[in-house]
Image 1 (cartoon, one colour):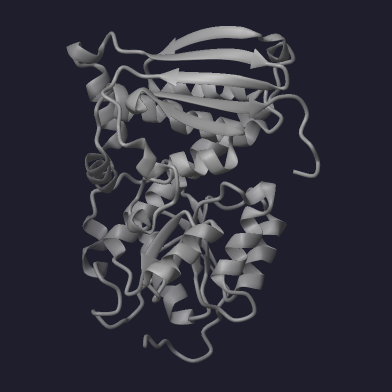
Image 2: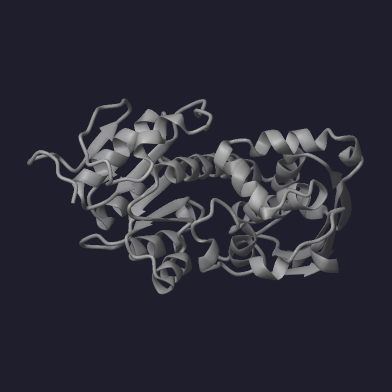
Length: 344
């Protein structure tokens, strides 16, 4: 058990490093934390940390501040929900302890996922319970990432960096998708070709403007388009992406492969057709395909990885239907069009 001086307040805001004395064995990787090969964010990400152990809060706060993040701490689930609802756009990610008084991490996650405002907020669940059943409970509730205690600080650094980048990208995409182009509803049939991550982002935002829920659809389309580029056309495998995420080199590697002679002419084709009350969107890459059936559901075996959830989340939250064809090099989705039903 980690101990701090009595009377330490559990609510804390922090932007700079302060030293905390702790046993060396308490947090794996803590001694190496400064040396992790991760780029500093151009502006500090904002993190909300919820844990009923004040010592855990202090350690996380201080170590994450060394990485350039601004943090705010709360001591239970009810406080976390209250703080998030008070500032819906105030945080880039939530670090959440699974077991807390008043309201535990599972129930907090369920409430957040039921709220459209926080449906895509990255939630990093921390727990000492690592059985398959415990992990599945967290995944099914909607946790984005899973960390077991004692927490490996190198892994935490990678996951927080990934979560903040994901959160900021989604917020930008959501803003663009919500800016409705009043001509997009006239679209009946179209075909697009794209090569780059930026083009994938732009097309996802454009097509989502026709959807009843543009924010949700933009996230899902972006996931599938990026997947077609990185895994399809550029042949970046699952394990390789994990290593690139760890070292902060994923984007750089995508750009490098896009410039290779063998990839310069590869495109992702996107066909759009209107079908009465929905759009059918077909995305085809020029890759070898992949074992897509492994990624349609959230899997406890991938719970501790930095990636591998996007297709399952897109299928669950973004589309009416999602179907892979031709060995995984083609995916067909349908989206509801028009104005959203307030009851959904």
